[in-house]
Length: 392
Image 1 (cartoon, rainbow, N blue to C red):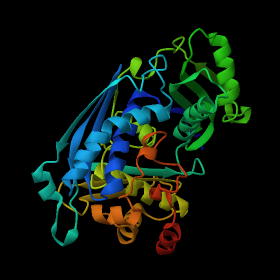
Image 2 (image 1 turned 90 degrees about the vertical axis):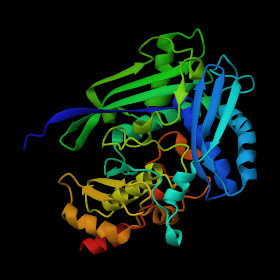
Image 3 (image 1 turned 180 degrees about the horizontal axis):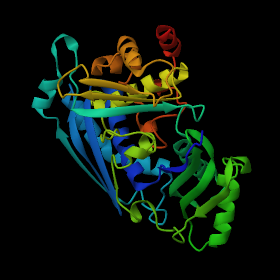
């Protein structure tokens, strides 16, 4: 059979990218609420710009004092996130001590609160929407290889920057990975793009050499490269002005980086800053949990899960599983097995994945999926054997 050769591309961004700064601040605010009140309702949004951070959102707490406390600490939290990322002064992209921080907290609508508080302690979905989960056998983490590699390239950039091994690197960076496939099988890496903020007045050819040797070569050996492999480093020229000094950032603007790099559809809802009653986040996590366990069970090489919810309603309005012809049992049978195995109401998801903990700032850079973080319960494959047994 003649398998079509094609290219597929995904990208990632570093923790110092302006959009990811915003995500990390929003999730740090979420964590501050959950640390004191696990049932707090949080929808936090952050904007970062040159010399400016704006934090706003809608919140509901049982204790008014907690609302006031986190609002009063929000500025300190934001400045610490900037420092932790590696921003030191205006030259690196934003000065965490001198920038302006505005905080505008609002209370959650009483109608939304009543609408999702159901009898018997059940929780209605915090919003309507559709969510997707995905897994495939291209990597040990059961993630698509282009995104998996893109994340690791910017993670390595950050490690070398923070360790002092490459002190001329700055926090803002992006990667892009193009992989060649024949059918569903990976052939090799075709093109890499690394755009990284650097110190001023460095020779571009020397920067390319260093990035190739220290970042790319350890992750992409020659055996993984196609015969036409190309590496681009800062293709637009010197990247010296970065961070919020170079571009604005907003919470929730890197949703494809957060999920699967375009390898499957995306429902459109962002994750960061939202407590787990918002199914934009929690249902996307359980959809990944389902898909990963299906692939780990050997029931498919690729698995897509779609869930959809109505605001104020606990049970999902739809469940779809698509294994793209790679399944060992019919997709319809998998759907029945999944309904019997996984809890899909907001309360069921929250309890089964233990989502009312202050774990979310870690999710806000380098992807929410495919990472071996103990707190990321949606990455467990503890249901794989059960699924395999039920599939017969």
